[in-house]
Structure formats: C-alpha cells, structure tokens
Length: 317
Image: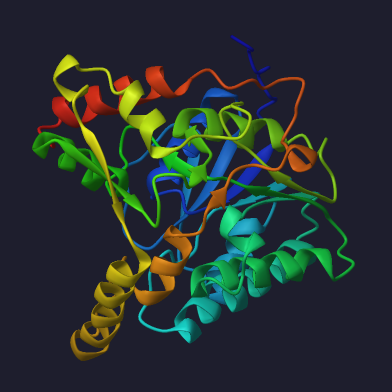
C-alpha cells in the first residue's frame, strides 16, 4: 500500500460536498492525512477533530467567501447530480462554481482541485455532463491566480453509495441490467481510492491538467465483468439483461414530466438515459491520473466485496 505523508497542521483545505457520498470519504482521508479542513454544509453537523463546519451552499456567496478564507487548497466536490431542468444544473454546477472560484482567487487560495466527471467528455448527451463541461471551462478558459487540477471520475462505488445499490438489488432476482447494450464498457473506482487520490492532488503536482481516474484496469469493464466479480456463489448464475435506449428513454421522458408536476427531480430522465446508454465510459490512457503517492488499492472483486459487506451490515440487502 502506498502511504500518504502527514501534512503540517498549518495547511488548510476548503472542501465543498463534504456531507455527500464521495465528500464524506474525502473529508475522512484529508483529516487522516493531517490537514485542517473547512467544510461547507447546509445543515448542522456533529463536531469532528480537525474540521471547521461552514454553514452555507453554492448559492450563498458570503458563506463561500468564509469557506475559502485562510485556505491553502480548495477541493470542490459539491454539485447537483439530478435536477428538474437543464437550467437547474447550470445555475448550481456552473454559476455556483464561478462564485466559488472567484472567492478562492480573492482569498489567495494556491491550488484548486475540481472533481468533474467523465460525463464532461460528452456534453451533448446529458444536462449533467453539459454542466460539468461548463464548470471545467470556467477553469481552463480563464487565467486565475491559483493553479488547478480537474479530475474526472467514472462510476464510483463503495460503502455509503445508494445508487449502485439499486443495481445490486436486482441480483437477488437473478439478473443485472445493462443499459443500452451488454457490450458497453465503463471504468470504475472504489470511493476510498478516489478520496485518497484527491488528497494526493492537494499538493498541486498535477497543475493545469484535466485528468481521468479509475482503478487501473485498462479498457474498463463490461457488465459481465461485474457479474463475474460478485463475491457470493449464489450470484454466479446472475444474467445480464440489456435494457435498450428505447425503453429507458420512454421511462426517462415520463419521469421528466412527472418531475415538473411534482417539483421533484428523478435520477432516470431522458437526459440520463442517453448518458447511461453511451457505449464507452472508460478512462483515456493519455489523461490517466498519476501520482507518486497514490495507487488504487481496490480491484473490482475486492471493491465489490467491501461494498456488499457494508450493504448487508446496514441491512440494505
């Protein structure tokens, strides 16, 4: 295992998205690495050693200024992953990020680590991907006083995730859905490995770089590889079932109408159906994240076992 060196107590990280799935793991990893963390939150949190909670959100400029005040590095994880309209994605993911980056510049932050998504490679496929591409452009198209690194994760899984949980519940019925086609390929990364990578990136060694990260498996996986890596013997007969875009798109379009009626966003929309059915969400080798202090510790088999053990421990499966 590659160990990350302890940091001095004088180094402060401003962190958005700290209360989310990836953010929670990242917060823990930053504290374990010896950083002091100023973490943005929209609701009251329990006290944690080494953490200062800042009440606010990406729509509150005053709280963002307070968040980055005195920080050496900004790790930006917060953003919408589901919304009712395209404008909602842009209002938070792009406009909110712009306010945050401007605050970071005013506060003399030295380096920004922005967590984007592989979806930004194909901005025409989904509203989410378009908003992540727009946020990347905020950094790449303007000269800032700070250096920056953009990191694009693929599918993220691990303890605490509830989205991939929905897929694993299907294995109880002997199948695993394959959006679009069983031949589609995708990269994956365990959340603990991603969190450690983000800690590594805080040293500013990957300046002005747009990087893609995964568990180190060239060309990623097909859905059959996920089935083959499931740890339980009673899942070995699980079948992969392709779900064509025609079906996902109809369900997603219906959800779009329902979301507007109920003022409640759904994860599966027509936009996300296009994203899910894309044939290649694998990391491009030329952009692969590399750092002397980081190597992934979870392959797919070990990562799935860790995840499923957590689901069962918490009575989710």
